[in-house]
Image 1 (tube, rainbow, N blue to C red):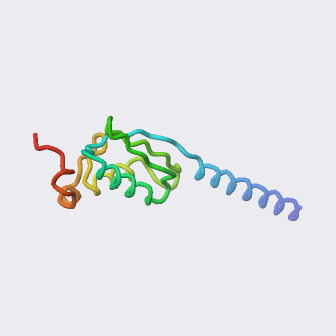
Image 2: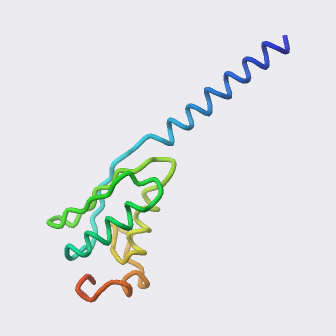
Image 3: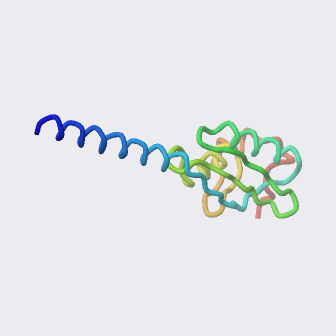
Length: 114
């Protein structure tokens, strides 16, 4: 009886760990409105996001100033992606750019003061 219990427990454990791994590998795509200004912004944003663990790719459309991000759920969150943008100096939807991030940007890449 102990033998069967151990086999059942081992099978359940393997199934559970495989399910968690599959969940971590699941990718999702989001589109975030940014405060990008130019092609230099595009490079800066894409580099910041593409080096973020869990991001599969990030691509900014200069016309719309929207960045499309494909990421692995369970490794990185939408909030972490937006915070990375904010720390890089760009607003990300409702998350405003940090002052430290803005100060790192060249003058031409800073959003106009309203």
